[in-house]
Amino acid sequence: MGKFPIADAEISNIYICKKCKARNKKGATKCRRCGYPILRPKKKSVRTKKA
Image 1 (cartoon, rainbow, N blue to C red):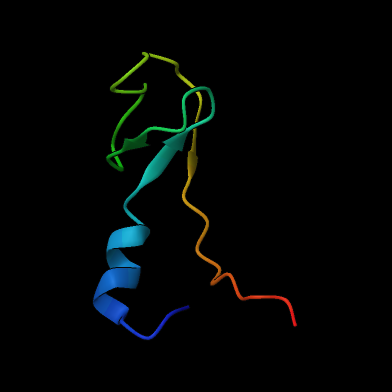
Image 2 (cartoon, rainbow, N blue to C red):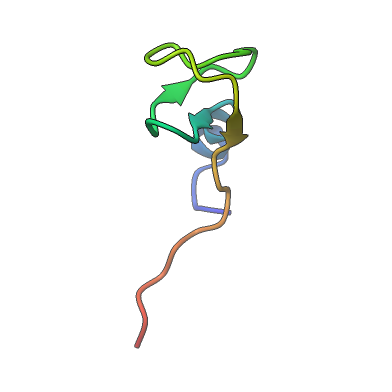
């Protein structure tokens, strides 16, 4: 993960809507913006630049 463990813990509480890409809280059953029921957890890997 990243440098900051507190930030990493907050990232794990975010779910992303597969339709509109909105951020949602962990306990959400549907998207807060569009109402779409399919959510995915936010990716936890650190993205790096290609050399």
